Image 1: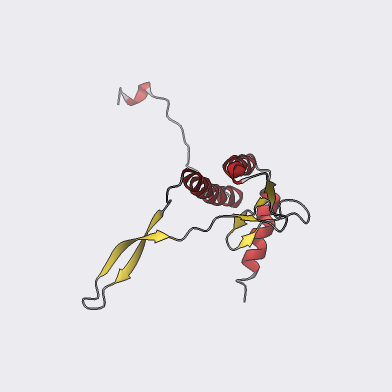
Image 2: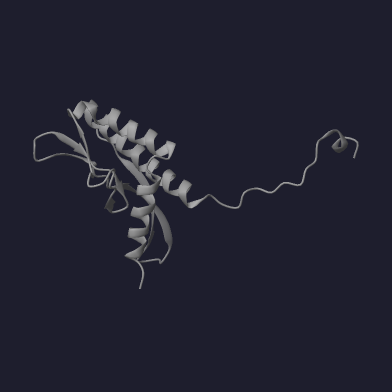
Length: 146
């Protein structure tokens, strides 16, 4: 007991969960990081693959096993009608409205895609898109209501 008396003992509890705002930020930051890596791979001329585990049941034995499969990853950037490259930020299956009536960010060329995605990720981390994420998430949830 002499050893414990040298420590400062307190009555503290660990936080039980993460706030919904922080969960949304974390989710979109993970997706933005995947897009950044995809853009870097395309710029460097290499293939980028994300592996995920999928559980499957063997038809003969009925045994469950985990199989590593490649996740299908679609780029968020595209060539707009005016011929310039644009980036639309996705949350689930929805595109986030970045400003009133504005759903994409125009970049000068494909070389600027990585830098723009990193700027968007910084804005998400700073909480600049929290209102848009909340609106998109509530709109997405309303589609699941009965």
